[in-house]
Amino acid sequence: MTTYGIPLLVLATTKSAALTGLAFALEWIPRIGAFTVAGTLVDRYGTARTFRAACLARALVVLAAAVLLTALEARTLGATVTVMLLAASTGVLTEFSFVAAETAGAEASRKAGARAHRVQSVLLGIDQTATLAGPAVSGLLLEHGGPAVMLATLASFSLLAAALGPRVRTAPADVASAQRGLRTGWETLGSLSALAWLVGGLVASNAALALLQAAVPVIVVTELNHSSADAGLIWSAAAIASLLAITASRRAIDRWGLWPVGAVAAAVTATATFAVAQADTYRGYLLLIAVVMAGEGSLTVVFRTLRSRLIPPEVFGSTLAVTVLLLLLPFPAAGLLVAAVPPAQLGHAITIAAVLQALGLAVALARLRTLPASPTSPA
Image (cartoon, rainbow, N blue to C red; front, side, top):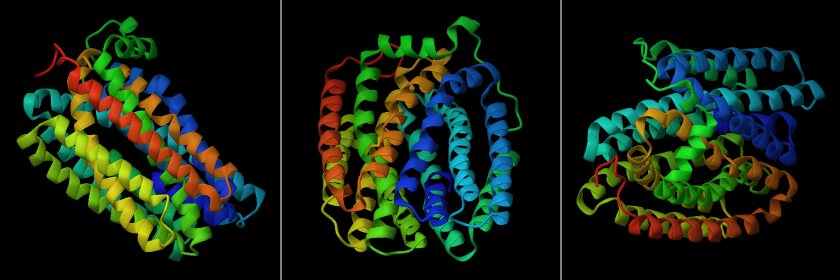
């Protein structure tokens, strides 16, 4: 709901495609800054405490925004400032909880050994099940209940996450404080060639995905004259496709291995992204983005499994923070691009992103196939 609902809220409040793109950038730029400290905090205080604190803080911020938007009229300066600040603050808090959750998932993957891909597919299935409902719920609540109702629902889910989070205090990693932090993450990334190529491929893929996330709400609402609920439905349909692909990937990796599944998923993702740029109907966007996200779902299982094997456990939080920081760089850039480019020209930008995505994934997978297995992980 945070990722897909907040841009819809900005578009509904401001009625401006440029401000929607700018808000998308503002939602992601602070997330990048948050990763300079999120990994260190997770390594130092544990996943459970960091996760609960981030969820509680997000609930308070969202409730405050709901109160303000109820008192302010749409398309006023006060309402615009409120939704822009909301985008920035929820972006930061979401990434703190994300790093905590990913660190816990990586620990579970390491314990699973050669069956790590099964753990990652289950975790991704949980994510995609929530993503299945989140965009559609955001759009429907915004369309029929207004901003306050949508934000109150989002705050309720944040409070529920904090309440259902693990009560057992996670022990911090038993490493010296000098080993924590952004510098440690950069040093780890630089020392692992396989991890560097992995991140490079993901950056290229995320550039295309970020542009789709930023551009599709604008295209659907302003160019195709559909509602916010219809825009949210696209991503819910995509979540169904992704969930099915994640489930299928688990069995496919068991049978054929990580590399063949990753290669097929990369080809499907890049081809579908290129086709999205040529679409001119709502149904076309709905079907093609579902295919894109199905390929992304399979790729994510492959890449997260490799990441959990490559990064040493004692510096996982810090290294994860650095890798995800790099992966997030395309998102604010995509928002700024959408703010600057007329909606009718966004298809050309998506075409260029699809070409770069295909090249980046091809090079990364080719390099990963030839590199030796990590000495700290199963072959």
